[in-house]
Length: 472
Image (cartoon, helix red, strand yellow):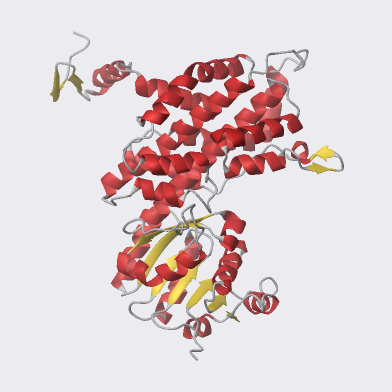
């Protein structure tokens, strides 16, 4: 019997532990490594293996060389450590211990340009580097995540069996994993996933806020309404967990009302916004979601501004038509538009980086195991089999047209009643701007030409650039 492990996992945080257990329970022999820091991180790997001894065959190490020597050739190592300099530091220690054709899989949320750089550097050393986006959080990692690997395709084929075993399955039983493309394509796709996720969370937050403070629904009634929406084609993982949150009480009081309204972020939403700017792609729903979190984080400043500008004689007890059906339609339209922006970014990145991304397959990967799984994503996976645009797909054209009046009304009513709706309004503006045949951008081009001689194109001649002496 071969005593060497089939795969190794470096980094035993929540995700690393969950993925190691997932692998072991699928019959894969696993070696795990965690750094040893006296007084803070001691015997992490050994203790983990001891505690989980009934879950499968695992061996724990806090010596990196011993860990590497425990693996069969070619060595396959999954990194589950914090993105950024920690990955480079780990690679500096790890690469000298490896042989030609060994494979390193970075399963963290690394920036795709860092993955591009690491892929090239390790290729020069004869070592394959796979940047694999992994979505689903702790539960997904343990029970089946959505996995988006990029890098050398031949190297992917050598590790695909292991990743397919642990991935979530779609409704047809196919693993939610597929080769994405060269270099950092996998991490790019995961980054866009996270951007869509940011906006989906913010849209749902704005809808909740409208229902509670405009329509004056108590949280339990909002949970009931969301449960009804689940049965009406709007089911998603984020809606499911929101229903649970709206019903969770602590000492008889809604726990949500005890949580400080300062939203944190780890950077992937901002990365996706930066990537969209680099590629010249409109990405307003996600960028506004990122800024909404940033605005929420300056709580003390918001308290000062609120005390200065709010009229404390006003009350939220005014009776209004709840408009729950209109809010539902606004929610539906905003989500379609948010996904449109995300997949449009993927399409443009695929063209500019020559990744040949399969948008239908990417959507299929996101139908289970990941945070943005939903009935909408299942529709999108099918639509991209024959269409190349979400917003121009016949079924979505009808949905958006049917929702447009309600969408506009709800955004206007929210703003009129001093309720900030950054992502709902940005989704509406994106849609209105996209369908405006002749916009005011011609004035911008005239202004640019006036002060900077940047030139402009004419309606009657698209192929030539003109400059005017405007002050003559």
